[in-house]
Image (cartoon, rainbow, N blue to C red; front, side, top):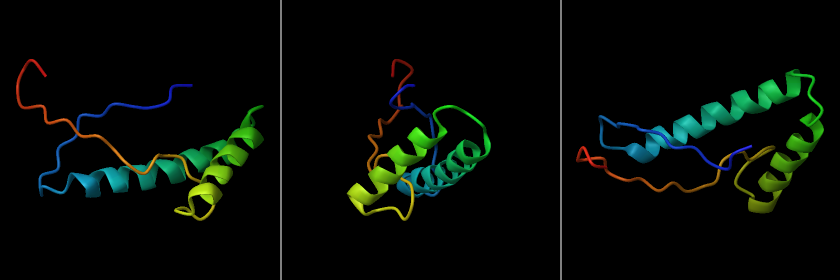
Length: 80
């Protein structure tokens, strides 16, 4: 399992943090939903792990999938 993802995202209103926040919220809910429904051997381990992170940080109710920060890079040239 990889530890991160890279996205190319545009925020037309200039509020990239809102786009990232909404993306994380939506995907977290869907990932937990799929993990709970899919009969997979690591299901309980994953749910415990995400639950532990939520309790540790206190920033999520039940499960925490994503880290709190992000590191944007402006792609303003072809080279980037």
